[in-house]
Image (cartoon, rainbow, N blue to C red):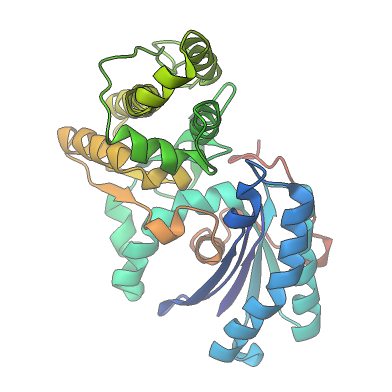
Length: 346
């Protein structure tokens, strides 16, 4: 029985995972409403909220499964905001010491990488390893506010980074674009809602890619292009054409993600494609990737909506799914936070 804690940014989350059953329960406190007034996450406020809410969430978890039944604690050790990560690690170390159970640190990005397979495990926990094997090697697209990456997962569950962003992440580009357009935080969902009412034909934004032959992404020029476009328009015109602006801007972001994923599929012998991270909730992206997967005769595995954002269920699952494969750390009380921890450690 694994108790997992997640506090890398602005979500306080706790989950319980039994490998023979699946997720027993998951609890989360979202801070979106708090940070919305500031147009983004304020680290000091976020860490304060973690301090206030870990206790109540743990009480609810322990009302489901008593402490005596917990055999391991998993906690996000990076990447993320330092003060927020420290709050989760301090809580995890305290519980580990009090209960005398081992502590394992989990790479938040690798947890995202495995999150699409949570539903595969839930379908039949007893045969998960056998069910996963035919899907490997797997091509994953991780798209969140802070990270954009293409990676492979081979038969031994080793993750290899294939591409990343050279500057802004896709989610960050959507959030910054939303801010320029006068929309709320978080920006991605607002852009998607407006885009659904517009057309992509009226504005042309540059493709957010590094080089045609490269798998890497680059979104900073796209954001700059939007700013220049808006500077040429009167406020009333921006208001009248906001839907088309959102549709065109979102199209440029998603087109880069889909084209690079398609290029990676053409270069490798993959048996499945995965989509994870907060931007994975975008329905247009899901539909376009589903079409690409169908074209290459491989299944698309999308993380469930509740597991696309920061959550503790994926932390617990990764701690178990990666067992002894280098993606987690069992340093115990010597475990330290790693705010800049990459998907793959050299």
